[in-house]
Amino acid sequence: MMKEKIAKKNSPERIGKMIFGILLIGMCVAFYRISLFGVDAFSCMNLGISGFLGLSFGTWQLIMNTAILVVVFFTVRENIGLGTVVNMVCVGYIADFLCWLILDVIGLQAGFALKIVFLCMGTLLASLGCALYMVAGLGVAPYDSVAFIITKMTKDKVSFRFARVLSDVTAVVVGVGFCLAAHNPVWEIVGVGTIVNAFFNGPLIQFFRTKLEK
Image (cartoon, rainbow, N blue to C red):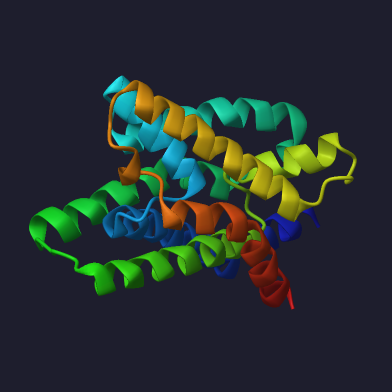
């Protein structure tokens, strides 16, 4: 019986959803960076800190995810699974690779209209990707677990949607602070896209999760 449950949990369908969802999130981060309208909240924080420390985005994101994972282990360890590891290791490097491919290899010079397209695609892929791998039930990314931690610590008095907005806004503030400390251009990491993501990502994730679960 136990083996059947494990086999069902690790079914090809679930693993496929998890991998596709994480790929979409990596694409989302890359599209936000290419649009130059600001990145998502977690990427904003990591880009700000990595720029301050002089590390690559992918490497610092892995370090930050590892640190958050420790907190997750002692609070909502049920959120940890295969998807957690794949997400924390791959998303940053997928984004770095796509930015290198599109900007350096292809040499795309995106005009204003194309940047708007990248912004819209990034917003859609961010929430859809998160919803996909959450529904797969193979673990949640360390940062995405922060909203669950807030909800659990407040005994469900704070909804997931509001907890996500709270964590996203905090991440943006931290990212901007480190960016300013490093004397780097703030507009490269925060902008309209950051605001849209910070306030709408939580509700959109919940929307897609509801649809996918049905």
